Length: 127
Image 1: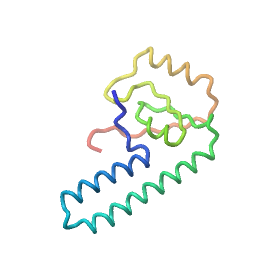
Image 2: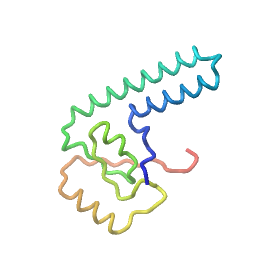
Image 3: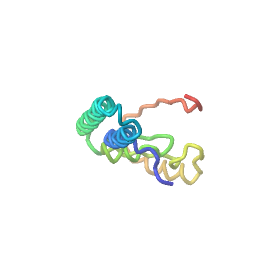
Image 4: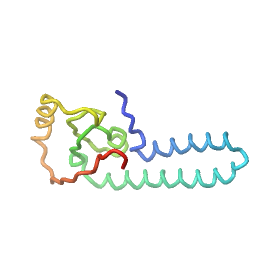
């Protein structure tokens, strides 16, 4: 399965926004000026966020940029900002981790020394 979470990189989000802007201008050429002002402002904000995030993550030693998460949805984020994500599930949150996947994850995280943090986000449909 290809990782469908490309927007987890703000730089990729800017590419999405540029493509959407181009499509909107093509569909509604009469509003081109207003669309471009708004779209370019948003793209600029995404590029600014990308630079800020890269700068913030660069202050954390690479060896400490590790996150344990429920499923592997952060590949683009990890590549963009140098963060390693460890996950028992694959790209789909619809599947459950197998015993072998959990065992492999335990093997990966045992040697890592880190400051643990735990939080849960809701995965209720419709939110």
